[in-house]
Length: 199
Length: 199
DNA sequence: GTCTATAAGAAGATAGAC
DNA sequence: GTCTATCTTCTTATAGAC
Image 1: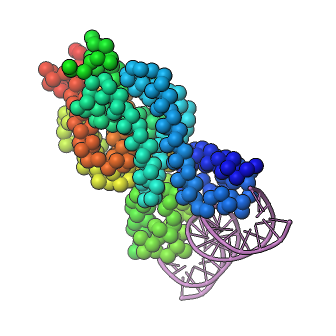
Image 2 (image 1 turned 180 degrees about the horizontal axis):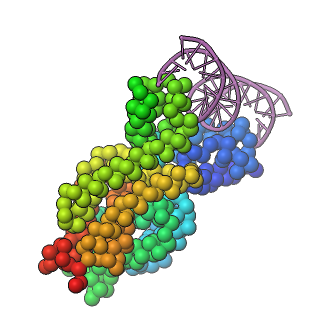
């Protein structure tokens, strides 16, 4: 296997294990074992654990950008785009119940470790925040677009946290419905979504 | 120092370190060092790390019960009692920005570790959930009291998660104000808080 | 009840053979 | 590029002196 491919495999496996078990609880041996590499060879590709973390965050940033791009392509309606974001709580609910939100739990762990990569992990949030904010601007909410974006991010984080704690599927569905109702209320129904800006 | 007092000191220090740095990242040596004990003597009081975790969770449950009891004593108005809960986001915001919510982050970590004590940690949430639910019942919302309690818990978790990520004080204050407005809307203002139940 | 000393294992990380 | 062997450090945990 080429070095490039092996490196990619390591990042994919590390990404999953960091999500499922946390960064600290995942050892080099765990990653090497699942990739099918010896620990010794592992260091040919990554010198330190922090290097793997950086690569994992970079990959997540790239995947998140691609996801947002896909949502942008899939619909011209800002409201439907925002709904795509809300719906991942339903789509990924099994994983969220088991391991929480990949972004929120990583930021929390790195904050507690006072890890240098915490700010990089927060950029995952910033990416979503900026994208959501742009959609709210398109909905005519220039004045408070960022606050609305943060509010929606806040709700998704709260739902993920309680989903992990209680494992309650009905709760997730109810809160997602509530988020969609909230979203609808942000732009009065008597105007078409794209033209609800004051003037 | 008596065994009782030493044990109490260990639990107090472990509680703080588990919160600040996480359960896994906190070693026996860290706790022993801060208490001023040798590692050897440590094992006289606790045989395993899991035993300390159990003691920490038990202490947190006791403190939470005492806090809820104090809020209950401080006011006869369910709405004001619920406000006491919401206000801890303001009171503890410095710690929350640095280390997140003590309950949410512990549950998340134990879920990822697939730790046996996860269900015990969730009981901290259950305690708050049941207490909030009782207050909503007193507000006349028997039918959806538990859903309202979960909704408020969800919001506080979301605010804590984003506070840790962005360290944004204005965001926390804005969302707390929004939670209070939401709370007010749950029981129409034209009726006194304690008598807003349908009949 | 507290200490020192020490075992036993896992972790991150390196050296050098192939 | 991949391996085995090894090193160091950290962490949990125990034994036994005081």
